[in-house]
Amino acid sequence: MSATAPPAPPTEEQVQEELVRLEAYRNQLNAVIQQHQILSASRQDHVRARESLDGVDRAPANAELLLPLGAEAFVRGSVDRASAVLVGIGSGVLVEMERPKVTELLADRLVRIDQAVHDLENQMTTLDERIQILSRRLDAVARASASSDVGGD
Image (cartoon, rainbow, N blue to C red; front, side, top):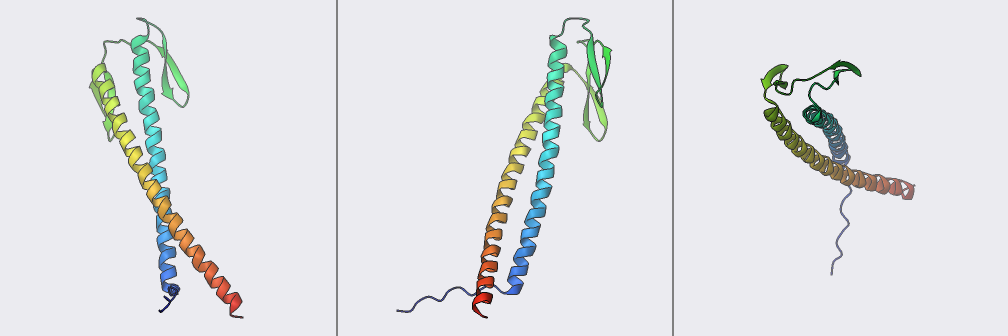
């Protein structure tokens, strides 16, 4: 019977390749995290827009509302519930749409945003797993190298 030899330690070149791969995974993870943050902010904006439309529809006729301008600035006003809504469709382009269509559009966008967030979370999990595996492997190589240096004195 022959005993199987322990696997050969990785070469310096292999270790360097894994370090480069680890850095690439970390960079990808950071980029995905940034995309996740952007989508989360967009989701919040869409939810607020939908809730604002619902609030306007529930308000009594000619009720005075605070209309947000941004940067925590508001103007007092009232909204004609029969009037159309301007909604952005991308690249700074606005279109005028009837309220029910805008509500439907916002709901559709939320579904797409939620799916994109879910996909990004899956990518984040996959990248994190790859980072953990590579980190453990590189740690094991470093420990093995350190113990062989100590034993080789």
